[in-house]
Image 1 (cartoon, rainbow, N blue to C red):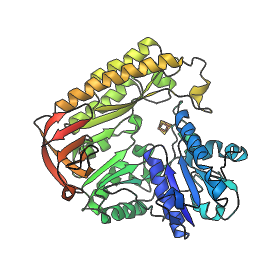
Image 2: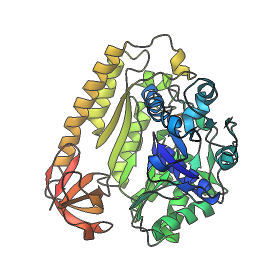
Image 3: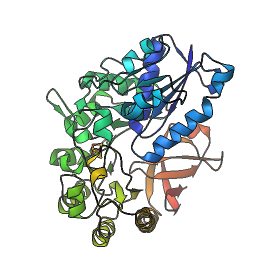
Length: 426
Ligand code: SF4
């Protein structure tokens, strides 16, 4: 039997798909590279925004026609959306045969032997111990170090669809990183909803970073995502300050620059505390790239509170910000807030954020002109086969002249031009 898997949403889902591939391959299934040859279509889904869910339903509706010419074809919904509304979706006539939640992938091969069904129970001990995902990337690997989240930010669906926080054993992480390196994936990103609270036996997150660098000396680069500002310890800042394989970049979601909004978001830090972490990082790691997530139009956000976010953006000068308009998710605390803002306000605030960040990013990228940067070349550039592209240590996309022989190597180049998203290097 051949399966075809499509993945939506964040890196965590990409990583889960790699785990699912491993489970299915071990059970004797074969991965199809072409949807036309598949007997089972798997959709690993995201619930973070309404739009993401609608997109998957659109895709399934486009693909279910295949059942007419191939009645034995099965469609499975996996991941966060399955966890949230899988039961209901199976009962509707959408062509979905199976729904499997994030803690039940081990039982997927068994379920696929049935004609239809769902597996949606949470299991807060499921860490997929002793399972090695089949990394699908070419030069970069994402390695899960923990699952779930205990933070309950008021806008976020994740704790409801991914369950309680738990850390993966060090031995499994080490095997996973070594397997990636053995396949020439020399840039590894450790993944978790809140990596700073990683804890396995007496191993903390900063200690994990130190140990991995010692235990996998072949690795070129080590990164991690996502950090929660409230758990970003001085010890982590110190470890980052030592550099080594650990890259000079952190993704540190701020979400808002207004203390009132942060409180209503249940983020457990004030803007001043956030700024304190940014200052500590910049002191310990000169030139560190700091990226963030921001929400525009959170319920009850006044014009003044929105302006506080713009002013925080100007003060901190993030290298890049992923800006989103607030999207209410059924079942979260913020979706119950009575003061939801009209879509037009959310959109206009989002646009202002994007415009401001674009200016800042352009300025920061231009400041790199004339400087030498190290690029890990990951592939050909999107525009031309005579150019290759990759990332700098501080997480900026760089394009340079080169051919296939450069792919997978580290090169030192000089930045000659910059746009608000790319460094052009010589
Ligand atoms: S830390 Fe907050 S935003 Fe991140 S996954 Fe957990 S609840 Fe969601």
